[in-house]
Image (cartoon, rainbow, N blue to C red; front, side, top):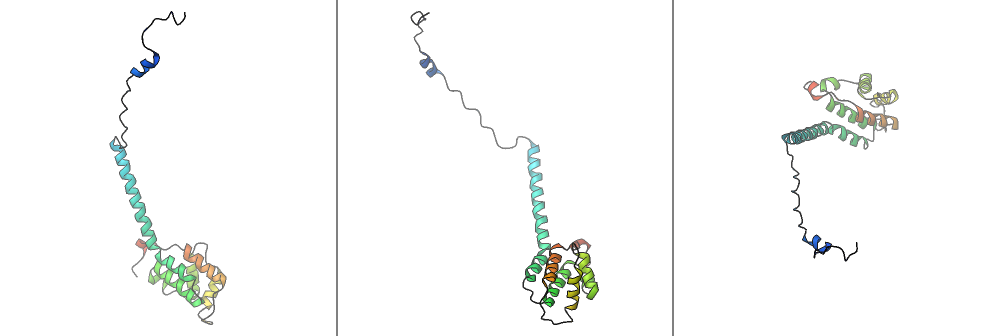
Length: 165
């Protein structure tokens, strides 16, 4: 069969393609949840985020004394100043009745008991002797490091468990 033998329809393929009608575009997919379960999940996530932020802010406020003590530690020029920073931090974290009366070996045992990893005995001895020797003596690097470690790692009693001071 040749081109001459083909039936003559009068239209070419290009003309037929031009007659095609473009289909309508599909309806856009909505981005809103279609069921109440998604809304409940979004509400639950919102509540969890708000609760997490509230806990983070409460923790941050509760540790404000710790951040202030660590900042003051860098400017402590004498062992007596360093001992005062430790005492202030302990008074902020525990009830006054539990901390205020501690002195000497009882004080360093408290620091050892409440700090994560303990408080080194040499640093504790230097801290105990600080009030009886030259008040202008600079703290040793070991004492400064032990105080910084205690300030960063001690675990304060939760506010609900504290007695009124």
